[in-house]
Length: 550
Image 1 (cartoon, rainbow, N blue to C red):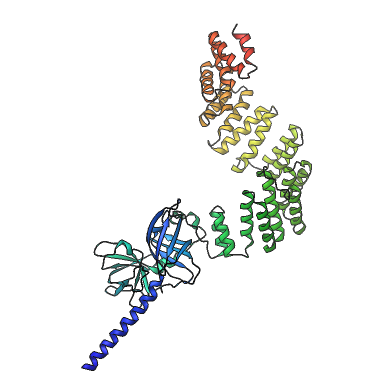
Image 2 (image 1 turned 45 degrees about the horizontal axis):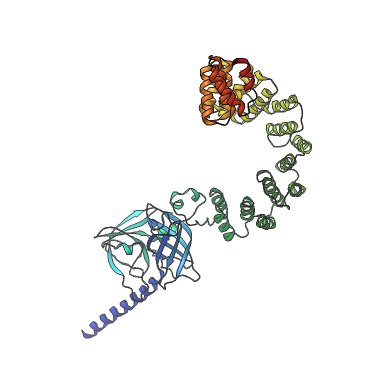
């Protein structure tokens, strides 16, 4: 009997020592977490724990929501920054993140077996003290959630300071992340679910992730990572992470170079482009992309002054691409674009014309050719003929993609005095738009209709233009002008007053108001407003005074 008692005591001692060993080891994984807002003020305090030796940890989502930065303090009192969010879910209140630590972290071991009702568990709090006593409890109930992961109810209440601490089994393996309940029970979300969280190609639009301002990691697959970076608006931090994670992927360097160009950091851009070219297997495409980036800088950032990059450099790069692959029409078209942007319209026209039998859409090519002819001072008939060729590539009823070519044709026809043809093409454009036309469209069609003496249609269009753009100067002036022709002086006066209110230093409102007053026989008031128009630079005001205000 005495031997049995001694054996029981010895076994109990061994179990106590074993438990204390895993407790001492497990406490190294538990973290204190501080999150901060955009001004660096403390947002929240809480807990979490490492689940991987590379600094991967998990905590409750609420702790991180709206945070712009975060830091952790481990059991040794060392403070480290959170550098990436690896996944998040607000429904189950979990977040997975990466800590920038300069040492190998001690993680908890994730339990592979789930627990059942009645089994013992331990809640391990964060502590920098040597002796840490876990809070013992039992599983009250188990629910299946999220692809057969588990959600546990524990038979004890948990203090706020212990939320997000690990829940361990008898072997010291972590089964869950403790969550607040009430005085009699609390909850634990399966750690395997938290560990399964990840960043995907479409995570850039994830509300849970976007509610956290800390940098998100990128997917583990390079194709998905490229999509994620693009969906994230080519964010600088995401691109840097792409390069860090996939240093041999050339696309990252091209995207970063593009960002550098937008910030006018051209030396950095050129360095990245050199790396991009070195890493690219398709050298023709690489030279084309470099040429396109230089071209875009010259066209869209004309204020930039980087001597090494000019249209000659852009031409050199596209010629390199064409020397490798001269069958790709897009490369040739880009060379034409460079000539056009640099003012060499003859060479641009020749290249565009050579592309009529390529795989490019012929209506686009005819449009490019018409632009060249217009810049070269060709007759309106030549320009209109090319635009007619563009429109002729479509069949009635015209598809949506025909609209810009019909619109351009109508504008040029109106400028050439071919108002009826212009109105007909404007009508085709409106049919395509289906009532979704712009104020500019109605304004332009009204001008053509007015010149055709289609006054009712013109009046309807200018009213629609004013409705869509009630503060547009040119539209209000045209509204007043049309109603002068129609002798609707009340409408003219209303437009004049609106012009004076919106543009008090512009002469048109005073001229139209003075004219309508003269027509009403109010010569003294008319003269006053017409003199104001004259003072503001209106050369026609004096003529109206001499004719109607004597």
